[in-house]
Length: 288
Image (tube, rainbow, N blue to C red; front, side, top):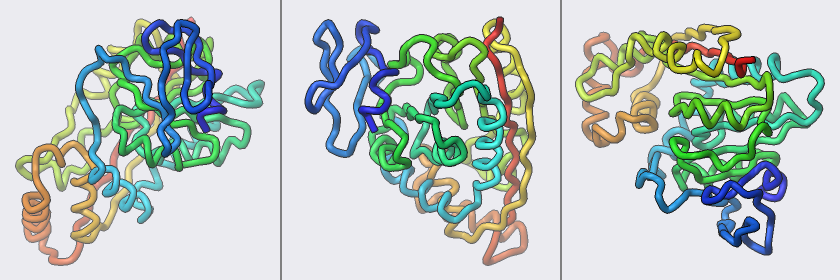
């Protein structure tokens, strides 16, 4: 899919447009970037931070958990928001998922928008490998979302940030006038049955207010929708949930299993654990 998105990409070094040359992308200043055999391209500057993102194990855990359908309510709500807010006058919208992971949220949007093209950005190469296979209309790019994004000015109709870092200035730059930014953030009680466990990453209770304060100079908030579900997870599924997120950087597999077993015992269950899924899906528009 790199050929389908190259018209929207720019060189991370000089910001010149990129074009395809054999098995690489190249700009007018002759900066060249090889296209990996798995189908993605890395557009990270040498000066970028040395952060590799999610590991192959984290990506595999996420793929297995999403396949079970537990996160389908969030996927559906994000897809509905994108479909509702894309301009009816745009026949072939461009959707950029910034911090896309494996493309689990981008894929349903492309399914619901047959004319859309998806650009997935993530710093993780294991994520990019899966992302390149997520959908026929997805192009996978390895990029540092805290750095300048390798996307041309005013080319993106819908941007996504789902449980991902948010680069406000760069997202404003790549969006078309009146473009929409869909941001998913955890509510204070998201996964509360697990965040009470020592070592599990917790949620900042002021996250939504901090989000609005950070964006208000360049974006206007259109709406916020709350998604709340109760999930019943097996021990294995609960392990996957911790293994796919930031807690995996703090607790090893044995520690995660012990923590979940303790949570189940505290809840009076040996087989399942009821978990709260609670997120806000906020839509912002570029300020006039």
